[in-house]
Length: 204
Figure (spheres, helix red, strand yellow):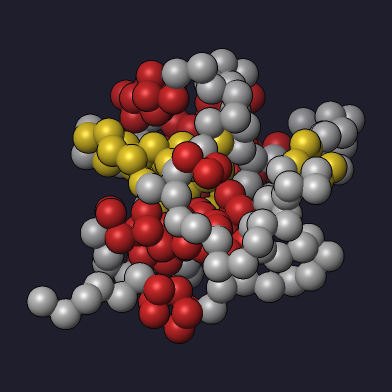
């Protein structure tokens, strides 16, 4: 359940009783779908945790979103260490850089991104930490639900189309800002044409 304040910020509540440790996606199906895919984004659910070894053996690139992980809870570690690209929120982190570098050192991550809302995002790639500036939303903020997912989708779009890291971050920031202008009662996402238009670099 997500509770949204008038300024668009939210508080998420989770039911820990849902889902069982025995839940598992059929390995044969997971393997076949992964081998037919360019990239797999893994949700942090128990069935997906059980599928991580199968996904890794296919060789497909993986990403995941750890959401508001505190950098300590062991439940998230298999996802953090198996993915090539890791997204998470700064909401519960005391020291984002330490957590980001720990993920990169202990796992396979080539890129770690920590989103920080209106403060932009932290970006670790090739052992270099930088900042991704926040992008002003095109209209007033009404609901931050889905902003993290939109950021990840924008970033991955850039990555899968061969863009350099700073451009991937810009795609993510623009998509995330756009998502904050859309009420959760409506389905809407920034389109490819608008995203590319808003990230167009001026002619030299």
